[in-house]
Length: 218
Image (cartoon, helix red, strand yellow):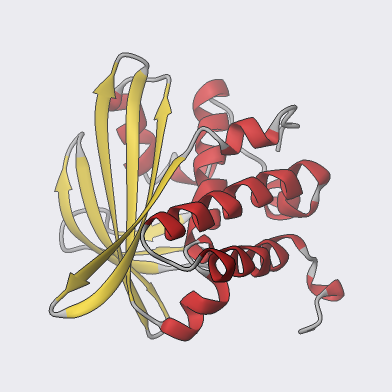
């Protein structure tokens, strides 16, 4: 992972929003991240959907990347491709064990390149939300969007080992802190109590930046 000279500024490239929603009559919360990349829509679409290119910034992926196809990312979530409208939008389920949520990616060309909007919608789980808030998923996506930016800027693959340890570095700590607090602010804007939202953000920061051997849960 190349050294970030200003990790707070890189984290600040993402605009964060939290919304309250519903799906099939059940309440949901939606974490939305937007970032503009200095590349054209076709290139960004390819980076997001080409199974040979995805591992260069995210994780190896197997399965069928087409509508109705099931995919699996290595060591992480799998799901089903529900919609695909190249090169503008795709929607997938995001499944980890019994947990089911939904991710929608929308690309829009603008004067600076292409805006990526990622919306991650999950059923309301009060205990989990109270503990970690939207940063639980949001910070993970922030890290992925950062790696995507590095790949698009250089064309090179991001070192996955360095990517895994990045949050525990001094630069990574600043990045995670900035992102998590940004998600807390977004949750407050959607109606969450400020003190609770920022306490949840601090727990998220600890989750991402404390190495397992130093964690109280280990």
